[in-house]
Each structure stands twice: as C-alpha cells, then as structure tokens.
Image (cartoon, rainbow, N blue to C red; front, side, top):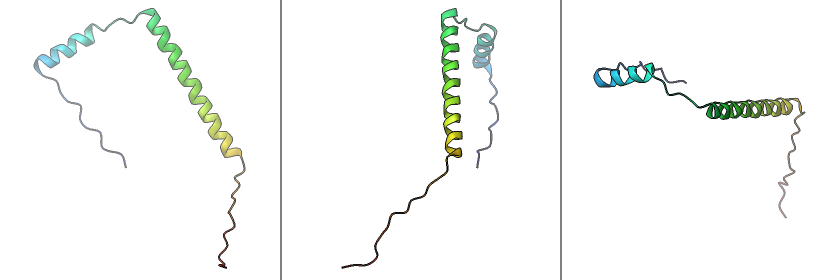
Length: 75
C-alpha cells in the first residue's frame, strides 16, 4: 500500500527569501548542455520502447513448462 503524501512545508525567513530569489533568477543552461540532455532523453525513450517490445514479445510466446522426472523409488 502506498504511503500518504506529506504536506508541503512552508518556508519562513531567510529560507523563504533564498527560495524566492532562486525561482526569480533561474540558472541558464548552455546550448551544448541542452542538446546533451535531449540526446539522453531520446536514448532513454528508445531503451524504454525496447523494454516494452521485449515484454510484449514474451507475452506472445507460448509458455512451456517442463517438469523433470524425479524417481521416488530407492534401490
């Protein structure tokens, strides 16, 4: 069973001022970094699709159950 979601904490004082300043002035990401992030994202999506395709292929395969012969007689 999932854990309940906790309330979002409220910031006061210096923490609140720092948070507001960081939200108002986000760091800029270089074009190269953005391109790298996009390549990584595309790579992730391809891996996810391969995983889904393998899972779907396994569902389509007929399952074979082999039970090894175990002798119950003793010498």
